[in-house]
Length: 419
Image (cartoon, rainbow, N blue to C red; front, side, top):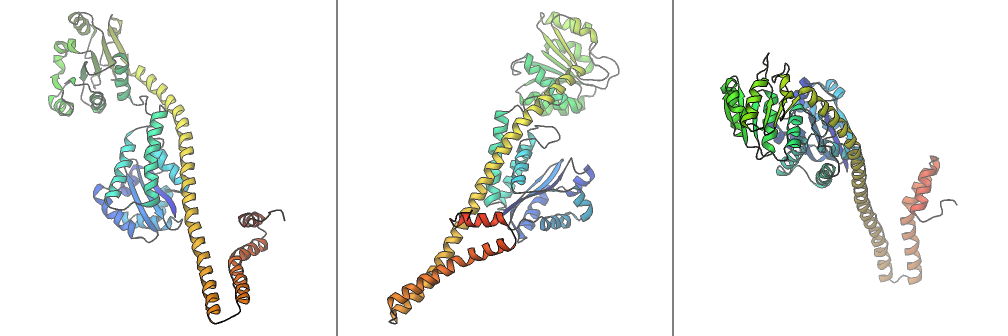
């Protein structure tokens, strides 16, 4: 048996090609059924996301051509175009690749955690369709354990590498818990949406969304249980906020020094964290001069992100070492599994030879043949049958000048390799 990974990702193919090779949830069922019908394929799992499409297979023979042809036909793609973007991995390299993917080491954003859930979902779907078994099933279970170990033993996912996540991480550093804090989000674009999502995941439930259009603000507010206000209402509400995070497309500052100064008086000078991730800036620069007002700009967050990316790179080195160790361990198990099968086959073959010779000898004894002659004949025939295959293998190695193979054969037969 052999393991195969075949796929394309954000490093090898542009988005227009990744779209053509992607499998929709509706297509996965048919694709797995078709894949199983290929005689060479024992089992399979399909991982399809916006950044990658990968097919994991257990094969009877170590070949990728059958799977490549099937993929080309399924999506009706020119073979040459597909081959230019495809990568393939076999056995240990295949195991190592899956472990890297599940651990976030092969992601567009190093260490991102979402891919782990996507791989688990892909595996669960194959289980449900009875499309995965044996060696591949064992590999996925091993991979889930390895990915958890990487998360536990390294900081691969512990540092913010997006502006939105960095803003939330900064808030968590200043306020140990976000449960009891009130956050004012100014704007309702993609960045603020991500901020709101991260805040909600960290159990922040007191969120106010201020936006120029209430309709857009309400869509965001409904997702996180927030209340909405108009931009012009900020002076009336800002004193409630422990944290203000702003990202709009306004050309002039929305929050000036006077607004924050009044809010701090109402708050009796309880500290306020203000994070401005807009360009041009939403919060007047002079706000940072106020006591109890802590203002951070997008440049500050970029510095945090840059530092954290370096930390993730260091963590990735540790993670790669873990994956190298674990993939080797998996291959040892895989090889020992093959050895067990080979030993069983060898024993069965030897037993069949013994039974064949013994049956003839018993028939000879029953017919009155001399026992000594029968025993001598049995030992000669059994010996000749048992040494026939190893003798041929050693002769072939000698003819080919393959000293390594000859030494290995001698060692396996208990002979001194030097003689």
